[in-house]
Image (cartoon, rainbow, N blue to C red; front, top):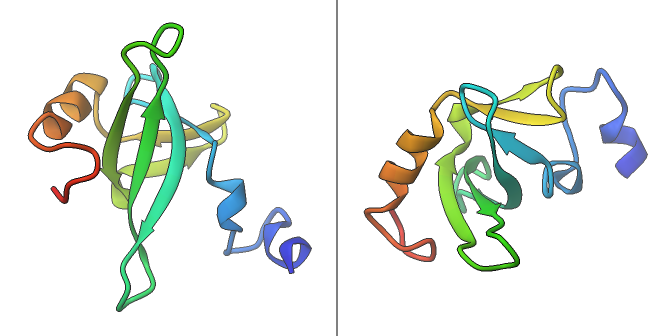
Length: 102
């Protein structure tokens, strides 16, 4: 089934091709990698993603929750570009812990 959906040009993409993809901010600065997709139980739609940002030698690592709607795959970058700047992402995520709902 993977080959059926993951070929270039298809509208659908397997989740394993999204997880671990890099995420960049509006200006192209690296933020981290997608750790998981958060799916609405009722609609089945991806609502948010958790982005893991590595710290130096594992110290200072963070996770940020972003709405799926602020991400778009950028063919010029090897991953997804957010419509927000890194400072906005950090500010929006400082109000709650990564495991808590926004």
